[in-house]
Length: 463
Image (cartoon, rainbow, N blue to C red; front, side, top):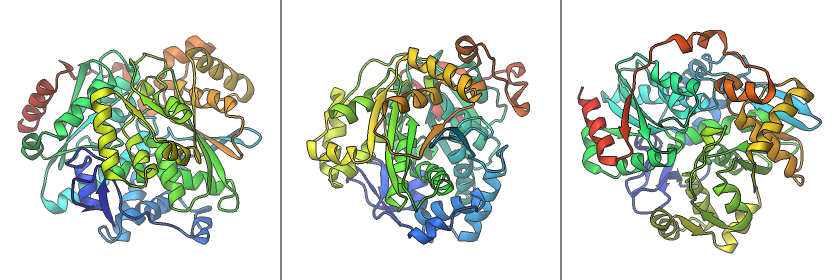
């Protein structure tokens, strides 16, 4: 398997190099040169199999012969043994033909664990054989950082630095990062938004001297291995509901578009996906893009679903690349223009291709709160604000064919104050995290200045 950049100015690389690099040198995102596919019989064969076995098959299709199948299976078995539910991502029925995939049974109580736990083991496996130590720099809107810290803490071949927007994530989200005591973990509260953090990470990756000095890598959803790992629960959920004998739809709360794009990846691999509803909060850049064709950055608004408070969805570039017929020159021109001017007009034919699968729905704060209350009253399920955005959006996406799976991306206990205020019930942290509020925190506060952050990264790596 070879991987190419969406901007076409970097040479193709293998799976391992794409994973360790994260972002391509030309600023583009890696994507498979050719999509691997499963037959209908192979997909049907996933039914009833342990989650780790399906994960090894799906991720293995992207790894090719670079990682022996037995080694990858062992990594997947170990990664998903860390989850508190035997099914890893179990389905719960909410209504006739409407189901919820619980993606929050991992160590940091968020869907990011599904990819991050296997990614950490991939890094350890590869770097150990190369006698190499890398520095991982990630930006988080709340959950990526906690999942990265939980997955990489204490690992001898990796240093991990998490940047998060100061005051714009929940206390529980913050503490999953800042209470880690391992020497290889650094956390930075940035005086800005998630988009500021993400822009700083991209600038760091484009600084070739810094990349070489600290052997920089990234585990945000720009890293294709995360997308591959997230595609797994599309397969397990759909097969449980009758695929490939019938198509299944998904409703995905989305900020950086990685989770929704993983559904597109699953469809390219042969899974019959009828529709993906992209549910956004008031930061509705993606919903607007799918509805109007105008992908335009606005001011980031603070909401009760902070992991989605994003006005620059990195993975949209991957979908754009596919929709314009893999025209790397056109993609580079569009996203370099977006970086400078903050807007793209999606070509009409490309928009039509996107709309064959995707719908966008923006959800207000009021409707998010109503969805939390309604879910509790009608199903007894206590859902977090991000899941509530998807539940609310589904009510407006009336042309979505069933069965439909809502992706529940975080445990309600990561947002206890907002959930309790809205519905009167305070969600409790699971036993393993019950003392989180009592653990001491350790993090730095720095301005949203790329050079300041890059200096911190150099110093942390040297120390």
